[in-house]
Image 1 (cartoon, rainbow, N blue to C red):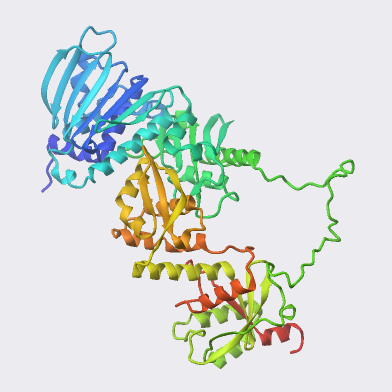
Image 2: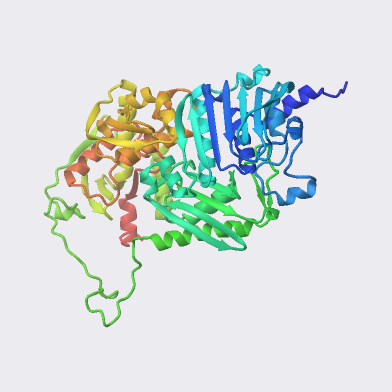
Length: 614
């Protein structure tokens, strides 16, 4: 049987679409304050906004006769008919916010229009009018929202902790501060002032207050007009990057939006400047004709559609590329003019070659003949591979042969070639390209990537030490001070024990700053700040419940950052020790990210290449 829902149920369903949590209440009411022309807005919350939210502005206020109507569904002063949806300039327009908020909470409104002699107080609980009286009040509007979801307990139980909800509201206020720098914002949490902007229109000052001096010092301005659109704001230099998009903020006509198109355009602009899987800092503002936008896509108005997608994409990508090109500190190489003798370029036909003595200990020697006294290294020798497969591999070209060899190595039914009962010697030959070490073993030449090998060794050590609880804390000579966003600070407090288990001792340093005083001895040579941010970024979007598992899952990243890099000079003794440790690993053939640590080339292939075998 089909029946119509009553208005009370309809209102509560609609409220669930618009008002998901206290942060949504703050967003909707602050947007109304901005639309009302306010240049000073104060937001105060208690217990994560669940029990109390008060928003005060100095805007135009609400006329007495309009107050009851404002709480009706789809009552709005922003549009009159469907045609107005094509030219929306206000942040709010659907007339759902006040009705939705009032249906699931206890709302008190105090407002005074600028030309009125007195103000009015209107109280509505769960969508039911309680009182409507005249009161003395300053120009503007104050909303007090108490006990959100008090009459919908099913929704109330899905709210997060008070701290989490408070953090979400803090993020909303941060976006308002960035997108409307000409408005004075004051944000108070449980009696403590968390945000206070000057309203002087300086976006850079607000970026500094939210993200700290490290990012503020690395900002590159953007101000481009193209296709009758204007893009302004700031991007960070390439060295400011994370492995999540948490540092990317995009605003369109003053509205915060999350657009895959804009994310892709920004990443395209940074292509070639930062590594894949890393994301830059960007706070960008797009001013565009409202008729080219559809903002009526989602109840939260966080999504938009563009009628001129290609032009918007080009504007973002090209503006960023141009800003980075101008800011680059690496000069382009050009041929010197004849009148500038102080610049000497080597002839491309006669490149300069520097010969290095093979006896200098700090430089790896490239050939075995230069090192006749290298001692042989013992290790566990393998049983022979399947002879039939090997013979087939020898008939293939080099690339296919290497692939087949790796398939053999990765076959779980094969035995670890470095962990057999009999011992056999292998010989370290030397290094090529500053990264790859060559080993002679029987009729094979193994080529080992020093970074991938070291990464594997460190990864297994870290995992083992974590399981055995053998992480030793190393005191830093000087504490590392880091400025965090509210969300990051919450994560630190939530996972403080897990960070301690990994070697980080963290102390509060005042405000949103923390000080790292110790790290694990595994990471003492690393950039502590970069490593800490790498772990923190991994936690931002992680949904695993076990705190220590969250950290353990980042060990591959930690090992990668700690491992010796390509072109880092290793002595023969250091290389020998590294290779010994790699060969003892449980699974030595791949780094934690799946790249091979070792490839091989057979004596047969050498002889074939030199035409000893036809």
